[in-house]
Amino acid sequence: MVKIMLVDDHDLVRTGLRRLLEDNAAFSIVAEAANGEDSISLTKVHQPDVVLMDLKMPGMGGLEATRKLKHLHPEVRIIIVTMIDDIMFPQRLLRAGASGYLTKGAKIDEITKAIREVMANRRYISPDLAQRMATVELDDGRSPFEDLSERELQVLMLLMDGQRVSDISDELCLSPKTISTYRYRLYDKLSVKNDIELTCLALEHGIIESKQH
Image (cartoon, rainbow, N blue to C red):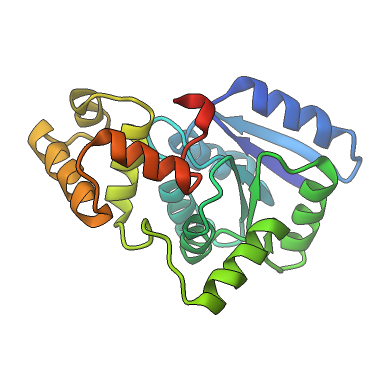
C-alpha cells in the first residue's frame, strides 16, 4: 500500500483529494498538512511514500518545502499539484527534487497514474505541460521568470497574493526595506514598471489565475 501525505493550505482541496484517493485500496492517506513547515515535521512522524504538495502556501511554499524534504528524506517522492502552469516551475521543482508536476485540473486517473509512475522511480509531468516544455525547448524559448532566484520567486508569489510589503516582511523575517529591494529587482528583471504590469505578466504566464484579479 502506498502511504500518501496531502499538503495544501485549502481544507476543501485536501478533503477532495482524500475522498478520491481513498476509493483506491492501494492508497492510504497517512497525514495532511496546511503548509510546508508542517509537511516536514509530519513526514518524520508518518514516513509517507508520496507527498502531494501544493506550490503556493503561506509561510514555506512548495518549492522550499520540496528542497528541504528531499534533503531530509531523499526516499520520499514528491508530486507538485498546483494551478500554476508556467513551464519554468516544473523545471525548477524537478531540479529541487520533485518527481512529478500536476495541475489542479488533473482528473483522478491522471493523479493515480502519476503516483504509480513516481513509485516506479519515473518522473511524471502533465502531458499538456510536457508538450509545451518540449516545444519551448525546440524553439529555444524561455520563461521570463526562469532567471529569478528562489527568494525572488517567493516574494513574487506573496505580492501576487495581494500581500503588503509589511506583511511579507513579517512572514519572511526580513526588513521592509529588503522586501522593497526585492520588489524593484523583480521589476528590473522582468522589465515591468509597477505591480499592475507585474500582475499582467504573471497572468499571461499562468503564475496566477485570472479569477483572482
